[in-house]
Image (cartoon, rainbow, N blue to C red):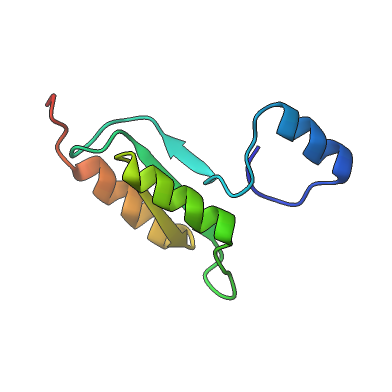
Amino acid sequence: ANGGSRDLLEALKLKRMGVSRGFPEIEVPLPRGGYHGFYLEMKRTKGSKVSEEQADWLDYLRQQGYYAEIAYGFDEAKEMFTHYLSLVDATD
């Protein structure tokens, strides 16, 4: 439910459901390489900016031991996710 524009009623409904402004679009709860999981904020390849809320969430997630990044476009996202999956998990 994260990402995209919302009308007021839909935004209120999502807020009641626990959706938080600025939270990354992609979440993979799979530990790898000492990280608890993978979070990715998606942006267009050109003309996109990270909001203060998005930057705050990414900083917080990193402090909590998650791999949290910003990808500009599909190719960059794919590269980051492939890299993350290649990390060796402590239980492997």
